[in-house]
Image 1 (tube, rainbow, N blue to C red):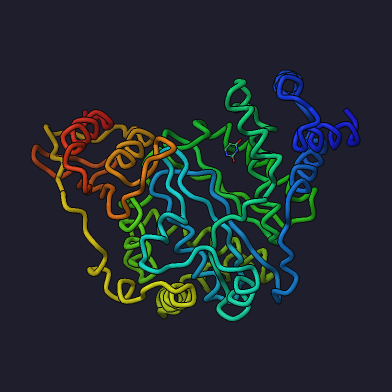
Image 2 (cartoon, helix red, strand yellow):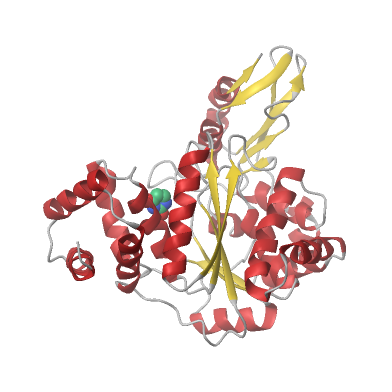
Length: 403
Ligand code: URA
């Protein structure tokens, strides 16, 4: 297949000249025969060019971005963006809303009263230049080819195909306009990629697509077989992010945030990874990362009193502890299921017209490898919908194995 043919198919389908049945045949053929990295990179470029690409050239310095392939309790953007900005990096972040059982940064930020996630473009650029970072909702016309192709893949059994997954994710990343991109590719029961090998293959292909399109790239491969940190759910995750920025967060989350932020700085500032780690750690201990988060919240109209005093976040009406029924070691957590339970408590949308309850979610008290006794608290459920509480408790117990 030549580059011209690839361009013809992507443009033709996006503009409606190629019908669904022909595109389905193309996608299916691509799944069976495969496509090399160069052509996948070119296909991704064509997908990007079907929409708008923001011009970030008015931002001084290298603009860095991060992308996580999704997970449960992944609030890294809330921590990483202020750390990078506090250390002199620039982040013009466009984020998404929750998708299925994985939460979205924009929903999380909207649990801060008044936080505006749709700044106009000029204000967005100005804030990145003045504050160092801004976080807004993804623009509508970002890689429209991907939106159309993804919907078709969903109904034609062609979602699970590496080049299609990589081009889909990277089309949106490249269209966000950053110069340097750090990918956090997850594997495990709470991730899209269930095995380490699949995650490695996806990471390699996405790095190659980015580099072939002129970006500085780095990929981390991280475990999502247990939720990240302790909090799942929008305001609960913001609270945990604030604690992490103050150096009081759970170790797994704190370590990963430093790793991602240091990688973004390494690509942006051209200094060694070890030096970047030190810069990031200092930004936490000196309070500059937390202050930067406050600056971002203030610049985007959010009420910073709840950032200064996390006790001011509205609590859910019903809070219930899930107790261990027996002694033993937690040998396994079904993280995807834990994410679904959190959605059912109100933290996310499982159906298109579900509404988000910002105070709902789960605080996890025990994870895989922890020893428990009868009556130990395994998790605390938060919801404003009393009716779902009983089933959620039973499902939570079902989602973990104690041996
Ligand atoms: N996420 C995406 O954006 N695209 C895929 O194909 C899979 C996950």
